[in-house]
Amino acid sequence: MRKLIWLLGCFWLSASIAFAQQDPVFSHFMLNASYVNPSLTTYDGQASVTLLSRNQWTGYEPTFEYEGGAPATQFVNFSTLLQLGKAPLALGGTFIYDEFGPRKDTYVQLSLAYHLEMSRGRLSLGVRPSVTNRVLDFAQLIAVDPSEFMGLGQESQMAPDLSAGMAYSSNDLMFALGVDHLIPSDFNYSFDPDGISGNEQVRVYSLLVRYQYYFSQKLRLEPTVMVKTNLSGVTYDVNVRAIYMEKMWGGVSYRDSEALTILLGYSFLKDNSLSIGYAFDYVVNDSESKQVTSHELYLRYNLPALNSREKKIVRTPRFRF
Image (cartoon, rainbow, N blue to C red):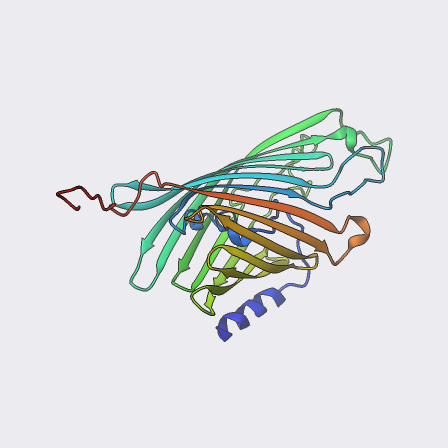
């Protein structure tokens, strides 16, 4: 464990300049691991539907005449086990709508994972092809030079993308390596046909590590670390979550150079199949240009697997098989 902490520390210190966030960020990243890495699709063996709604910098008012401007993100995911012959596969589909200021981004993603059971753990491999559509409203832009032509109305651009990852998990430890934006794309909105605008999707590498420590049969502690880098800068999220009787949880997170987060959640129904969570973010750095609070709601419902890997026990008055 000490070696792991030392390696993570070296990774964080390997770059001093944090890079700008390209993709939507969620405070419930520890409960939405397949979004971070496609190899973790249905890694817990449960088919599920997950909803996330994030309202960032609540109450933010722009300094110009247009209303709004604060980022708002909606997330829907469906994941299930998929048994094709003897191949232990998992399939997931994700839809994301991200709106902030003059831009509206839509993501449609399809994840496929392969889970190989090993003697001391499980090895997972995954890919995620996707399509991103970005819409820019030029009417909401203010040019530094008023004589410069900025375009009229809305301009949209669509591009394919690809992510890949691998993960290893045991009873208490899970770590996953991933890479996003394997397909180069430049969202220039027809203003830069040569592709030198600097608005290209930069390849991002990620590391996700989770450990479970049991205080008792009823209480466990679950620290999670997520590190991302584009090889010119590093950013990280650290979370510690306490889970009681697999029924309720509370935790705290820190997002690199930005915010502290408090998380609360509860699972309903006898089998805990319905989970609801809430995250409250408080900006601790560079709060002058934004509101200091953000809110995020989390909802997940576990569904019967479409293709269960385990043969169910069926009882009749004469037979048990």
